[in-house]
Length: 460
Image (cartoon, rainbow, N blue to C red):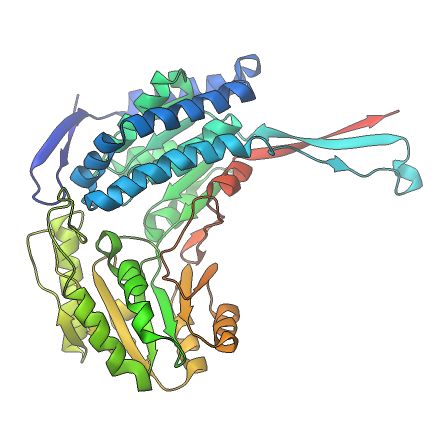
């Protein structure tokens, strides 16, 4: 049996070797999941699913420190942020359980025409079927919860493939489900670094729903390969813009912008990347931002004081460095930056990179923020919209008029006013537009996607 080596993100030292699945193992798992769904008499009762989700949340809380250290170890997220991720994951499990209190069909009015007289109609909710979930590395516990908890809550058997770089948190969470009494056939893992095996899972005709979090190239490709009738949700990246209006209080916005830009070293799909500042405020803003960024503590994510940790792999650090160098060669000025280790970059600020530069057009996914001066607020909004990605955005302004204008005109699924682009609660809708995604995430919305309504009509 082949094995997968999990490395520590910060120093690339090996953490653990775990066995990988092969084709026959996957075939067995899909067959077990399909059989579980086909056996309607064996479906878990709603109260059983509620109890399991709540039990797992309780177990997770009792082992919060262990999970936080594991997230920091395999994924490189600084320990304080990893601890927050564990708390969010536990809350997400409870969110899925609580949502079942109101997860129901509705009455459909009859008798509105003579032909519909004498009938009573209502809908019920049913699980959609086997769910295949493919996850990303950057939130190795909470993203797994966002895919597993809704499936288990509505009664779907689920097979989840964690990112090959960060499988340990997923395996540990699935072990908690076993401990809480969930049978293996209802929640299984696929451990592999073979993209073809992952594609086999996603495109199997017995799978009724694909939940994919990861690169746009892979996600859109898999969608094109899905069998007829298979639904999907895709969550990809972005190049999140921030508009800073001339009325903004510059002194109060530096902290949230710094958090939005450099949280998890910028490895977040809604990380603040492109900041558009009124030219009259540009110098003051850059001075304050650069002073704050210079104080960020960069290094080992296992240390309690670390604010910015490593990128997930040396090739990612090299790619980000190449993009920065390209922008500088094309005329951008850089503040900060540089390598701390093979995977760890010091935070960078790029001033006025050209619009055609990769850092202006693509998702950087690293500790880099671009700052542009503008003369016209409306034109800045148009520039912010002029990329292939559309996810979350934000505007900072003390005047309500410009703030609402930006909120209405920005091409985004969510616009934050006087907050950074990476703000999220797990019960709110979360969706990418354009190439950034397909469908709506967030635990209640995913539960809806993983279920189907059936209408029943009684004729008296």
